[in-house]
Image (spheres, rainbow, N blue to C red):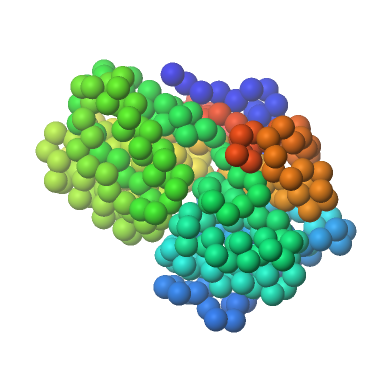
Length: 356
């Protein structure tokens, strides 16, 4: 089954791709810095830019800096902040340990931010600090991966929607039988674990002749993901496919496959990837198809949700409604969740149409 955007979402993804150059210039001019206390487990960085207006300030904390997926989502967030008139800053670690984001949450509290938009590396390790922020009136918006300590969660797609999209692509290619492996990112990432669990359940229930030999973790690091892909291909003799539900892992699985002709045509790779990173592998035939949503739109939507919370237009209650600029109107669902849209499938016919 192939997932496609509805017309409004399609317009949103094309429009967001068109503004990458503007957003890149915005972030390129930002100043760097490190919060007091540093980050536990890796180097840290930050960038800031005034987006005009003075309607408040929002800090976006991605899982890590230097990750192209979050660079894209942060560009969308910066674009939204400029439209709204919020002061925007991006703060985050370069490592993805459970507590690496804590110093940046504390910086946001100390500098009086109106909202924190965070993609948590660990759903619970950041909660004490996020709850401290909330007691001081700071709105907390989770995006990409959920936590138990936020006002609203901006979900890129439903868990079942992501899982079914990836499983259906793989089952169709394999003829509904074979041995596969799953190469995920961070072992503690709530969204990745939810997708992996849902894929395993769907495979067991609907595709019993497809067996998952192993689940490996690339920890959102290029070298680690490459090594894990190598290990899977070398250690599982009958491996027919790898599903990699994060952008680093799918890119590096394709990278390793491109370096090893003996596995080409034997192991099929798909997952959630960025068109800018996957185009060369699709064009060369290494990867047939992969899925994703527009990460720029994800950051853009999260920032509009933050503004709606700051303004008091929504509280995170089911049924709350707000408008997110060019993306249109959204309604808060159960448990404070807002869903961006369905999974989109990229292949040779369309991968060159997008620049994120």
